[in-house]
Image (cartoon, rainbow, N blue to C red; front, side, top):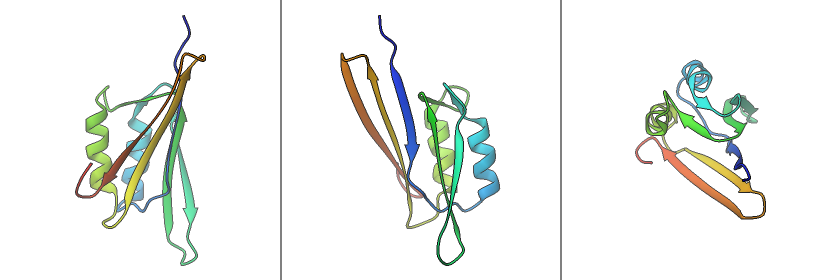
Length: 105
């Protein structure tokens, strides 16, 4: 039997509280270490993204709790797009995207 192999990556987004975002990313359960990325915009402001090899499981195994925490941190008029792509040998290949804004997910 083959194992499911996944990779997760987000877009860059603006965060209300970068320190709280880092603490949240450090606390999320995943198959591998979740890395936080930064991107400086021309005006000097920072945007953030994260990713990992393997799937995200959430906070204490609850992915909805993780999404709600992200919803509280994303700036208005911005969105977090969480992409997961994965495969199990050549049996199947999957891709999904979760969209989180400050008002909806």
